[in-house]
Image (cartoon, rainbow, N blue to C red; front, side, top):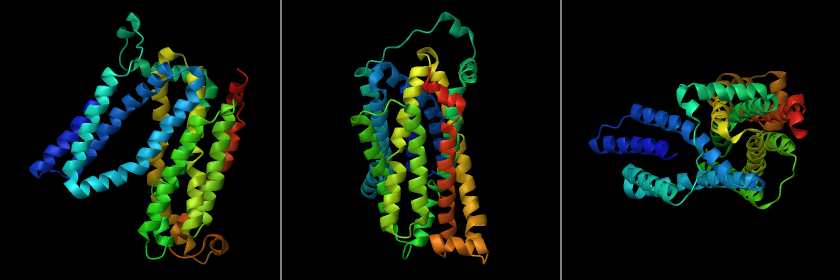
Length: 356
C-alpha cells in the first residue's frame, strides 16, 4: 500500500514540477492518471485483505460500511476542498496538499498500524508474476457462486455507468431552467450524502444474516427506485429523492459482497482473488461510460425529438425537449437493472452460497 501510494505521489510531484516549469500539457495528466490507476490495482486488493486480517469476523459488514462512509465523504468534500484551495493557492497548492496527505497517511500506516503479515511459502518465490493471477482465476472457476456474484456486479456496474457517470450532468443541466448549475450541484451533493448515510447505517445497525438478499435486493431497490425516479423527475425535488434512493443502498451491496468473499475465500489467496474480482467487476465501467455518451447523442436524444409513436408516448412520462432522451436512458437502466438484480439472485450457484 505504501509503495503504491509513493509511486502515485511521484506522479503528483512530476505534474507539480512541470507546472512550475510552464511545460504541463494535457497528455502529462493522462499518463499520471494511468499510473495512478495502475497503482490502485495493487493498493485496493492489499487494503481489502488488510481489513480482513485486522477486523474480527462479526465486524466485516461494519468495516465495509465505514469504508463506504469514508469514500462517500471524500466524494462530497474533496471537490469543494479542491476548489477552495485552488482559488487561494492555485493548482500548485492542491498538489502540495496532496503530497502532504501522502506523507501523513504513509507515516500512520508505517508506524501506527500493525498488520499481521503472513510469511510466503518458499515455493511461492519459484513462480512468475502471472502465477497469482492464474491462482485467483482457478479458485473462482472452482467456486461458481462467488464467480457469478462478480459477473453480476460487472453487469450492474455497466448499467449504472451508462447513466450516472456521464449522462446525469447533461440531463439535469438540459432539463433545469437556464442550465442551472446550482441544481446540478445539489443533486450531486445528495448522491454523496446518500452514500454517507448508507455507510453509517451499515456501520451502526446490525444487518440481516442473508448477505445475498442484502446484495441483490439493495441493487434492485437502487435501480428500481433511484433510476426510474431520476428519469421521470423534472424538478430538483424529485431528482434529490431519486439520488437518495440510488445512493443509500450502495454500501449495503458492498457490505454483503465483502462479507461473503471474506468468509468464503482462504486468507492465503484473498489478495489474488480480489485482484481478479476488481479486474472483472470494474472492466465494464469504461465501456458503460463510453457507450452511454454515444447512445445519448446518437440514439436516445434524436429518437425523443422525432414523431415516433413510442417517443410521443414516452414524452407524456418524461417530458419533451433536450434531455428527454437521457431521461429515457434512466428508465431503461432502472428497469433492466431491477430485473437483472432479481434474476441473478435466483441463480442456483449463487443461492447455494446460502446453504453452504
